[in-house]
Image (cartoon, rainbow, N blue to C red):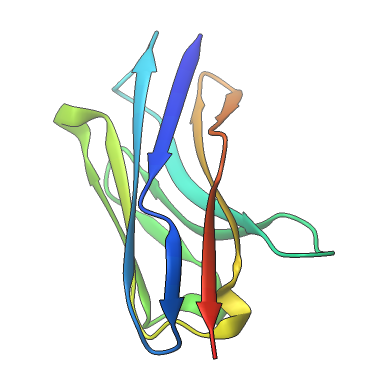
Length: 116
């Protein structure tokens, strides 16, 4: 099993920044995996924010390109999401996900609230 622990959420004013972290533990396969972030706002479906492969290839939702940056520290099994120029519409619960050997593992989520 894989456990994911997220941190870094909170309340911030529009235009501000936050940095989310997610650390994986348990039975990890480091050679090939994908880690990333998804979010779910009030009354919406969970959506992809940004993902990164273990080879460092990243993909972003159009809505966050140029504002969010995903990065990884593979030695620490940790993925980060630097969120800049935050907007009220970024308000959501942010979930970390790890995919390995065809299985998906999710964190418990961390709330991000952006006030206008």
